[in-house]
Image (cartoon, rainbow, N blue to C red; front, side, top):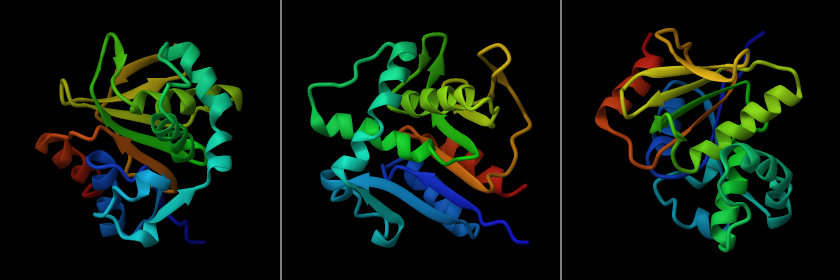
Amino acid sequence: MCRVNVCFSGAAEGADQFWGVLALQYGHELIHWSFGKHSKKNKFIGSEYIHILSQDELNCADPYLIKANTKIKRCFPTTSQYVNNLLRRNYFQINNSDSVYAVCNFDDKGIYGGTAWAIQMFIDMCYENNTHKPLYILNQIDGLWYTYSYNDDNWYTTDIIPIPSGKWTGIGSRNISDVSRYKMLDLFEK
């Protein structure tokens, strides 16, 4: 039986776009989650890879964002419907995923940017379902890969990162370095 590889992402410039390019280049299917005004900003991606979410669909993410907010201590809902929908879209990136690969900036204060929301929702859902699905971060600050430990709620550096396969999420920063692009590509060329 052949297992289908599917990349879920968010149709944003930077890491989302590059994960999508890599997924297609290596024969994976691709679903970029988007919505109304956001989808009009993504001219670089073929429309056949973009799934546009309705407002009713997007609103289903609210309980997960509210729960994630208790951990990352940011602000949801915000005063911007567009920003709220960007955060809601993050839920769809991780909801049916078997593993997550993210490129972001990460330090002792936590994960920067919108990627933090997707990662925290993924962690929360894994705890809720008593699953320990793989979660990897490529930290642009030190150039190292990290993996999440559910045993002690901590991040550890690792040199063992499997090739993305099955239903996987590829997300991250809009601003990715050439070093990060190389390390993302390197995952597929093992």
